[in-house]
Image (cartoon, rainbow, N blue to C red; front, top):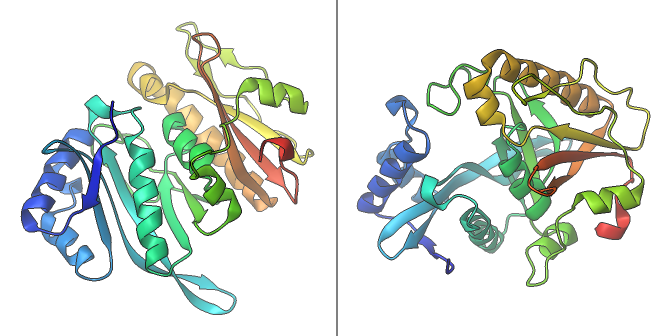
Length: 292
């Protein structure tokens, strides 16, 4: 498909379109829809609401607002990107990347250099976009960040989230958003690096991936962590297994971050029709240098 038309949204009528798109992206809970009056307040006070259109149809949006983060030197301004949604018929079409690129341009124009947002670490599509394609990094795991969510995608599981850091003036990010971006990592890159999984993937009788029984020993400077690429399918078919994945990943990432590991990349490979997704965690200055 051709690139969507992306523009700033500023009027009440445009915010009503965003309201309706939220209902299509996260069905089932009207109370979790951000209302148009809040979105208007956001844009009238330094925030940004960006919409992607195909002709006159809104097919994607992203919104955020200025915030403060605490540092050893005191409060520091940043942009908090709160929500991005893509119409179900347009997922995996590159619209999310284009919306984030537009947000990157606008926030840099405002003079800020740091954007943060949260996402579910068990959603491989989001990990591939946020970590691999956009160049965000993560060292913060937030348990039940939003309490109990009631929409159709999140209901029933603790709302654990990664909070990612997007340093938008860094060489890492600029390289990924350039006209000649660094290719995202594939399994062949991992094999050439010599990096190995700390466990062999195991599957249930229904063919659904199971989490390991134990977290890794955290002795290597580079660590590869595989997650299922079909977590929402696991949730719908085997809810106890989805809970197992939530609590395993919580223990793993909280332990890793406490030991000063950082999520720096995500490997996604279709692997001849069998998709696989893996986080790369690094310690200290270790990276897959030849692919940076």
